[in-house]
Image (cartoon, rainbow, N blue to C red; front, side, top):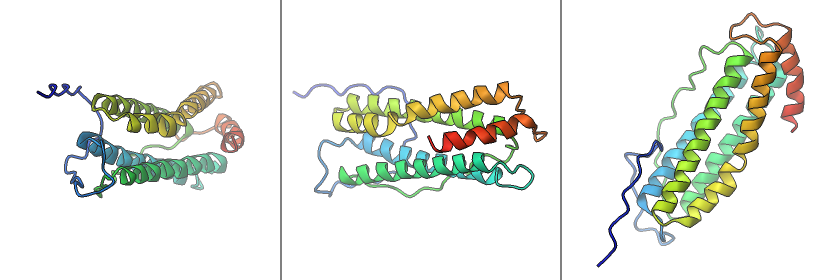
Length: 202
C-alpha cells in the first residue's frame, strides 16, 4: 500500500493554471507536475520583473529627469533578470518540462517620476521574488524533488540576497539625501545618480 500523499501547503506561487505537461519527454524523471507548473509560472514572473526594470530605466532616460547612471543601473538589472528567466526555462527543458507562452503584464510604472518610488518598487519586487523562490524550494522538497530545490537555492536565491541588501541601502541613502516621491527632484537625486556609478560597476 502506497503512502498517503502529503497535503500541499497553501501557496502564493504564480502557477501556470493552463499548463500542458510533456509526459512524452524521455528526459523527464522524478519531476512532479506541480513543480513544473511552478517553474513555468515563476519564469514568467522573472520576465515581468525584467520588463519592469527596463521600464524604470526608460523613465530615467527622459529629459525631464535625466539621471543616466540610475537608468544604466536599472537597465543592467533588467538584463540580469532576463538571463535568470532564461536560465529557469533552460532548467525546465533539461528536466523534461514544457513552458507555456503567456502574456507579460504591464510594468505598472506609469506613476513613477522620481528615484524614491522607483527604488521602493524594486525593493518590494525583489522581496516578493525571494519569497516566491523560498516557497518554490519548500514545494520541491514537499513533492520529493531535492534537485530542483538545490538549483533554486544556488542559482536564484543566492544572487538575490546581495541585491536586496544593496537596494535597501540605496533606499536609505535616498531618504537621507532628501529625495522625494514627486517630480520636484533636488540635489539629493543628483547625489544618488553620482552614487549609482559605483553601484552599476559593483
